[in-house]
Length: 336
Image (cartoon, rainbow, N blue to C red):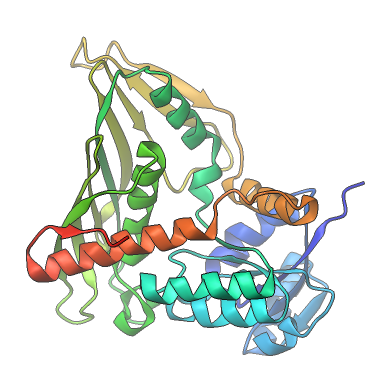
């Protein structure tokens, strides 16, 4: 019998209620025991809907609950670091939504907190442990497409709601922070390296002042990665990996469904109509369940967590450089 890790949830964010909590409740390694909201009625409603035993009308009360071992932090971006620090200082392990901070300097503060408190802190990039990405990396490393030289990505949705936190600059809103962080982390994951420099181009919303259309070029020693992200375009997402002997395409790279298989397309390019393409199916799974399971296993078995905290700082460093480049109009080197 597995000794489940007892989890508390900070807030009632949609991603927590709709995706993360139900997935973690299916995991044999996770038990969601408490949820908190500054509006206690919302916490009670969520708990009733999701069968969670304990509710709190403040985040402080949840952190004071000694039975809670780990905390999931899906609060708005500007609250990620402050409440992750408070959770760690209360002795709780933390799985914090991406992006883990508003900038790399802020994120680096978490290293000292982790080392001082001895808890685990991980950025919740659920894509990094999805089998479709593990298989994509394996295929590339095996030489299936020859030498990888170029990565391309696109991630967009249309959201003009002025009340949505993704459109609030002071909360860390905008396309790059919300969704551009995904092609960055995947490019770093697949190249297994950090870019040397980046070039960024940003178009800002005239009312919200958040970046609504962002394109970036990441220059790695092995090749290039380019991506576009937007909060004002039709919903679309793809990732492409082009090598000297073929290409791979991940069809639903980020919002992978949990009710059907995902697909990776391999093509040598011999027939430009796509007749030579091979579809590789990845069995149905839930990336949020996998994320919760692996982090909980690391806690319980005292093994390495799937994504080290240092990786989150590296990703934020690239995001910072894209913002700088869009301001200066120049290539920006990645700070060590």
